[in-house]
Image (cartoon, rainbow, N blue to C red):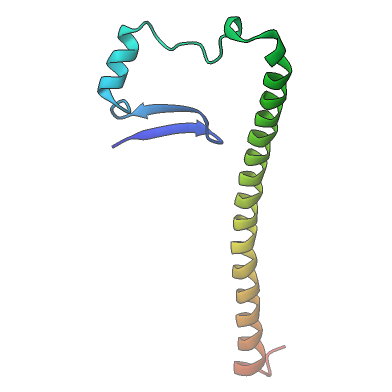
Amino acid sequence: VTLDVSLFGFFKTRLVGPPVDFEEEELRKAAGGEGKLLDFDKVKPTDVPLLALSGGVKVVGEASKIFREFIEGLDLFVGRYLVLIASGYIILKVIHFKIFPDFP
């Protein structure tokens, strides 16, 4: 049994259950934790604009992914209840006019 918690796919945390990979966890602990995501000491000055541009594109892409997932979830929620309400209304009117036509 596992319980993973995340915020729109980011900041994933496993609350209940074993780590993702026991061997990988042990190697990471032995190496002294996680390394840097990006080492700016190794970036050439001529590559900084390209790095900034690609980082900006990545941020915009991730933001649009989060927005898309939110809109899809909202659409699914609204669509389900729209179908339920419309079907219920049609069934109610069929019963009202066809089965009990003299009912006010």
